[in-house]
Length: 311
Ligand SMILES: Cc1cc2nc3c(=O)[nH]c(=O)nc-3n(C[C@H](O)[C@H](O)[C@H](O)COP(=O)(O)OP(=O)(O)OC[C@H]3O[C@@H](n4cnc5c(N)ncnc54)[C@H](O)[C@@H]3O)c2cc1C
Ligand code: FES
Image 1: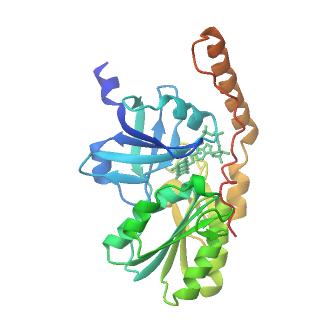
Image 2: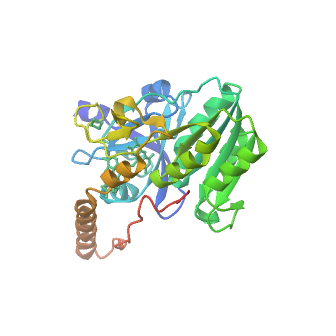
């Protein structure tokens, strides 16, 4: 009983950025102490829950907390959207996992976040700023109502280029337009770091390739154990095969085989859809049994790659 209690991690704050995106601040002093930019955790929301990888979007050593920003795209992330309230607990959380992003000696960097990728790029932008680097932030969202953390980025970037697909805030266009604008203004960019849907990161790598600017991307293949044992997170980097959980998640964007990554990510689409539909049906059954419970709608799930297209 005591062991079960000790293995649980309290949610101390929650913020909803949109219908499908939510932030959880979780108490875990040791994790907050150990976390470095670019690392991730594997979370189980409850005892029988699926293990899912989530990037550490922020850590606060004095509060002893880490922050996760989650997009509800399928069964587990939607279930967490309902169950993870302030005061509730996550059953398990392992990490920090992955090789921390190198906060190199670069003098000028562009940190690019697209859609949900805006959250995990934050610790890197802050890390570069603390190391004395000139930081240009490029953030991309579909539309103004989805924008989050603009103030946080303004505080740690020397320049910020906000892009929306529909032009409702900032520059109209994809993050690749923001990168092109930054490159046109600054001839001395040492490095670009990009996090977002694979198709966006592919676009970023293509935008920097002609300029020969070092470009790091954070890959999100399907992960199972997170220890390099199962092979689930295999990615092709140039002529090599790597495991994103232990060799990454950051890799040279000019060498990544993005088409292979996207094909592998879609391998279980039917099973994932069936699991989400079963879960929704269960929720509806519970509502029928308890007429006082708020209705749960069968939502059309967002495609995780549709958030920001890029490139
Ligand atoms: C290193 C890493 C960091 C990540 N960070 C975040 C984050 O900060 N916030 C966030 O919302 N999401 C993040 N993800 C993606 C997140 O893990 C998946 O969205 C989640 O596992 C989906 O589970 P589901 O049951 O809700 O949806 P499902 O319907 O099971 O899957 C939806 C889609 O998510 C992907 N996915 C499914 N299972 C996994 C898995 N075990 N590992 C990786 N991807 C999977 C697949 O592309 C799938 O098509 C990260 C993934 C990786 C590998
Ligand atoms: S998740 Fe199993 S090898 Fe990386």
